[in-house]
Amino acid sequence: MSDKSGQQMYTSAAAMVALLFGLAVLAGGFPFQSALAEIAAPDVDAAQHTEAAPKPEPQVNDPACAPPTVAPALIRELTTWIASKTDYDTAPTMRDPPVVTFCDTGETIRYEGKDVIVDAQLRAAYDLRHRRIFLVLPWRASDARDVSTLLHELIHDVQFSNRRWLCKGETEWEAYKLQEAWLAENGLASGFDWPQIFLLSRCPRDVHP
Image 1 (cartoon, rainbow, N blue to C red):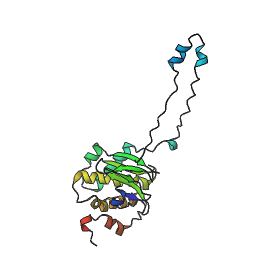
Image 2 (cartoon, rainbow, N blue to C red):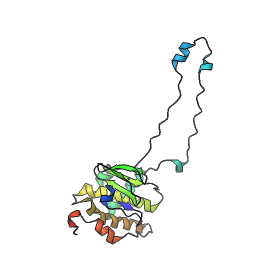
Image 3 (tube, one colour):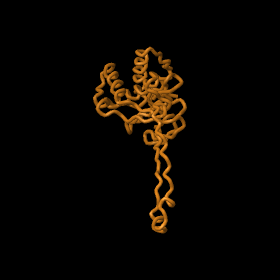
Image 4 (cartoon, rainbow, N blue to C red):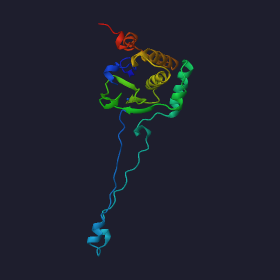
């Protein structure tokens, strides 16, 4: 997962338990005339009993108004990058990438089988159970930091397709290190809080009072 406080730091797995994140489905109806009206008054001009159909609203073609999407080419590019930096087999992710969905801060999402409210610090999350990546809005493919959150979650998909882990948190250290390397290649400092990431990467059995 990724969070805002450290340029894409995540909150703890417990706090998130748990990106979609919510896309609203826009449904529209259309007016129709009841056949009963025509049967009741067959001798009257049908035009007097027919409501004028409303003019369709013009379609907005401004890309800025459209829901964000992640181009398959970007997922392939990031997965290829992961393959170049690790020994993992990225073929499963390349062949069948996880679903990417979007959500808003404060929205309730279904994450790992539980209803979770998207925390204000959360920028992205990976749902292992359903192989789903949540990206928190606003998210732009033109923003390298936003793209790095997608990379982070794709790393998790590759990690879990290659081996078993003691806990989900165990994957975080490597994912953050790779994310930092990608940001550096794009001329950006991560600003990650490594002591906090170290704690986040420890499995519960490693935590002592």
